[in-house]
Length: 143
Image: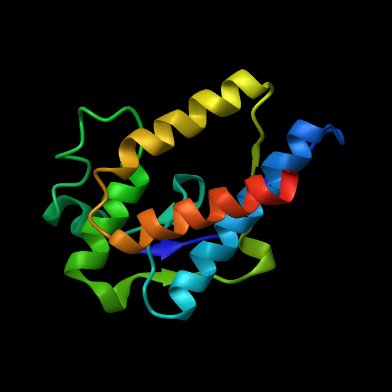
């Protein structure tokens, strides 16, 4: 499995977009840091590659059908548990994928609620721990 970098495509300089960019970059830093200390715990489905044969072997997305989001993380955890030395981060500017930020605070809050709801189902405890730290640090920065 190859995990790639993701960033937001910021269209204007609103506080909401800049907050999301800061939050997202901190998650990307945590993702890269996890790989750096050989304890990866995050990925983003917007930039994720894997072998179909391994996907099939691991029963792909089965086992988390009742959770609204998180297919990428749950699949990542399956790959990492079975093949920990075959999951890598592609650190390259040419590999960055851009995605759109949420358009409103309501959308952002709904997204984060989906993310929080799935986190209790993570099997890698490091992801839960770092997620809380990142959230608290970003809230402290805004405050």
